[in-house]
Length: 561
Image (cartoon, rainbow, N blue to C red):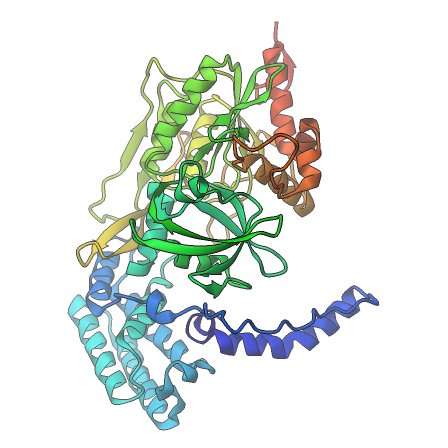
């Protein structure tokens, strides 16, 4: 599926369309209905030419990057792994590519059965040789890569970037789900997630059920916002080509680009007006710290309950600037008289370890936050990250929200605050991603290897990483509140509505578009009731502010003297 989606998406679509009647028949048996189960086929838009192009995806990939990455994995992976495992996985990755039917459209050489068989025979010989080897050196793997490249040249003639990419995918697939290559075309998205910035026009987008590309919200102080693009607008064309049924991933790739370059978007507003906007891309900072509600024109209101002055901070990931953003938010809350805080780490996939340390340190005055160590001697020292006392430390009562999608750095922060009895943890058990990845620079920084080099351990010694057969993992909440998929969807919709950046200069009377009219018109208490975990957090902090001790884990709710 992955190979077809990347190299021949049209073939994948035709296979899916061919299977649709069978899927509809099964759906009819499971959920009988008199309504048609298949949507009428849409007529293709002739000017829509946005398709995944593997040439762009694998742009700049070369053999030198792969060779360097294999060496780093052999030397620095947290467990014993040798070149034999990596080379065998890589060869099997190429074998899978060759045997995948439907790729002939992208690689005509695969349609020649004789040449295809010849390359498979060469790969089988290499694999058989590795079975007989005990100690495999870097030199042996290098020779294997040369042999593979020569055999490919004699036979099906796959592009070298494809050969390299699929060998790498197979090799690092033998390690763990978090070790992988970051190729040149991945760098923009990777920098966006870790550094909190990218080059673009500053809009959040989503695909609607009808295939329209909708603006969820502009980002404040960006080209899109200054140009007048608003939440609810539809992007009908990108660079003059229809954006109907385009994936959000494709749209992001097209709209982002080098700073100081132009992009033209055709926008249809909710009142039906259509206008072309030519925007100049800029470096966009993506804030990772958000409050309770986005104020018109920019900024956040952090108060979720004004009666008790309970504040709310949501951390979406741990980027380079997250600690400074948290400082700023805490300072504003202090000035507004906040008496207690909810720190929402739900759906936070993690990020930078150093940022997790700094953010946990904001709520701790001393003690261990996290330690890391590999399972073998790789030359990477065991580390201990500790909290330090500061006049700016936040000592307000604290509840941390987590769920099954809180991972990595989110688990470090929530686990440290729990182990030091600094916060009450509410929600559901976290994801269990306790492995630490280090970036290894390749080819003058044009690519990187993201490699698992150690695991981290919470202050009380627990490794939260979830292995295949683990019975215990993650951070367990003090108060478990499970949410159904319907509740989670309703809470996400309500949250999205509060996150929308609206125009401070818009006339009164509700003229600004709403993403969800029902949620938008509901009173705030209904928004809290749609999120039982958040509602419980507010209640627990109000109880604590009224003299109820909520951090005694032997009896969570006990009256203090």
